[in-house]
Image 1 (cartoon, one colour):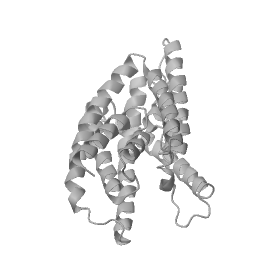
Image 2 (spheres, rainbow, N blue to C red):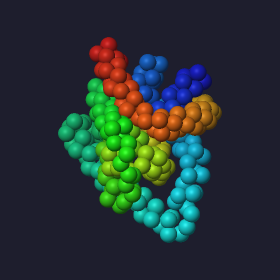
Image 3 (cartoon, rainbow, N blue to C red):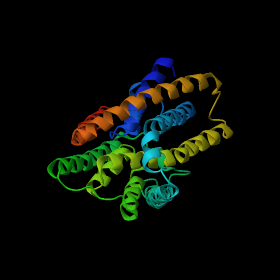
Length: 286
């Protein structure tokens, strides 16, 4: 793993993580093109650091809006916290359920199988990208057609639906979390900016759990003697985190501008094109 490869992956992660195009799908594809093993301990460590960098980018970008909307009073904060708790609980229930189904069907009979074993399979990433693309296109075109509709409140029920959709995204590389949750909010009538801010608030809550899971896999590999010496790549992962942070800030500015300009559906078209490209790469042997 060279510095150049780390920077490339950090830019891809930083841009794609915070745009509705699925960072995981893009990172896996780029890793394969660069000849890297997505499941190796060094790549696991890098993934942990890149996620940390993008989480910091989200906090920096949205902090002023969150402070104005959600932290203006104790009552506003309690209401916001309840929405987060409900949505995250639904994410956990749905995500765990899908994980169990996949591990007991597609991975049935494989010793010590985990759903992460499927993350590098392009034949699963392509349809997930296509599904995300279709959802984003539908939400974007509906929003352009019904521009005069009044925005709905972000109620507990709507937060629960958004959280459940987020749970569907977690086990599938290619099913963009931000794309699916923001689109779901838009389809439920929530204002675009509110759906975006809530989606990334959920991401900040979710990211530590994702990082902890990846870190546990790294520790397990180290205990099994499969991690090797990671000391030589630690500084590379730190550089990657910083680059991912900067790329993430750029991506968020782009995302917000396109949302407000009514161009959301274009991200869906991109996901559909990316799905076709991933399918072709799979056929080519990647």
